[in-house]
Image 1 (tube, helix red, strand yellow):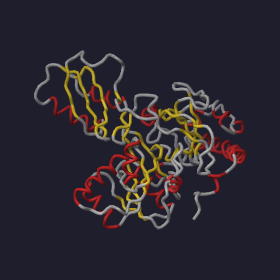
Image 2 (cartoon, helix red, strand yellow):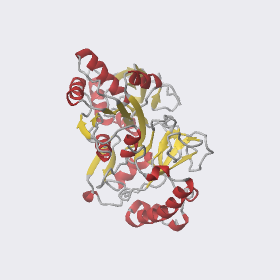
Image 3 (cartoon, one colour):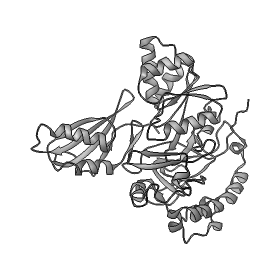
Image 4 (cartoon, one colour):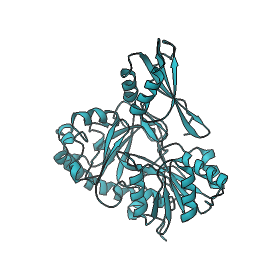
Length: 412
């Protein structure tokens, strides 16, 4: 059985650079010719001169944080799509809201490579616990599992009893989903007596995989590897069985730049992850994710030769992933504006027993009995996550400029 998904993973550095030098100018020309946004922002660029990271560094960034405004001006995709919406396969709205497209073709999101590296193979049954509603995670992971030959159970989110029952019934080989939800399923299986011992592998994303969490899964015989991707880009990087950093996917070019700029940082220095995707339908070029990471020196012991990064190391901005979903300061601003009584609001996220806990604190005075219920309803509408509401006195929240305060501790 091959240890690699395809020959691209083991290219020499010279061959990869040569392939990029051929593909990148054509890709930029395609984006400029077919996507209105890039026709504008890359109007003065010479595609022929952009043959690698050095050439890319001369191009402007496209910030994920600006997508909502851009998409409001030019719905649905802000003019970044090179394929019209009606010709795509699926259309999504991620929290924000941000519109995300899915085009046609095998493994459009590129998740298959990471699943293969995590040990998923043809003939496996994969139990997919990413959401299939509104956001693309469920669909993108299912497409990747199909690409490596897996049968997929579309478990989605919640309903731990049914998840455990389905794993036991089908004897699923692998779990796909957020890291903490697997713990909930295993705990419920222990309580109900469901036999989930068939699970031998897990491919997780959408939240932090803490060392103690990985150790607990592997103590049960579940080899656990994680991915780093976004709803805009699909796969960006993934762990292999060697467990030595995250290998950049062959479909993208990753730069690490100084936050707030487009300037690349030296190898090893923490900076913002900027990605260029070779996706003809949605040709994101120098897409600044707002995530922090750093380049690792050398190559992976597994034999894959692409650049490695440390993985997700926090946010360069305040846009924060909570319970696997991004929360943006603009969503908090809409909450404040919806209620004249609110003077200031702050979302605080902590970690309790490996699960995210969100508290929304609002400064307000002279509220009536129905105020809390009305605010909780707006939280559901605008932030789209369940959390605890705390009404505090005006002037009591810290004057530190934070709208989203992430108090979780993540190991680098």
